[in-house]
Length: 220
Image (cartoon, rainbow, N blue to C red):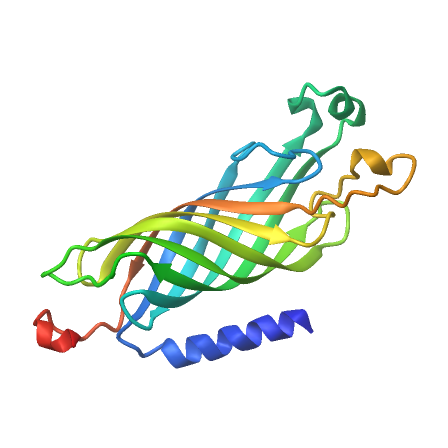
């Protein structure tokens, strides 16, 4: 049911935006990592390569709606930490993941790429995502999560935009890494430490259907 709902909204979004002048499509390349029972607080710990695709529709200079597909990997090893509890548990993981998201985006500066204006804008983004974690020796885990983050982008030309962003994905499950928390060894833990997945990197988008000229009258 969850999977069907996500794909339904993605289909509606792509179907409405596919022939629009304000549609951007592109690629993402960067790194992925996770926070969980092994890595409780270190950002950019044991990063792995990540890649994906972007489809975005701009309603105006400030607001956009986008869908992302991402592929990456999360890693962790208790032996990377000097804590005696980590050393005793001696757990590790190397799990691939696939992620689909639908997010809103807000530009702090008006963003419009024309020859009359070379825009540079910071932005924030948030939405809903569906993630599939591949456990090598166990069943796959799938779940909804809340992605949010920030970035900066620059309009190289009227059709091409280059940027970088950092996205954190707040899950509501403690089983992404398949590792028990320390309180679960002998008895159920009263603390539920939900896991996170994060993506950070660069993206490049183009406007495949952009037909408007650079004369300002076309932008009013």
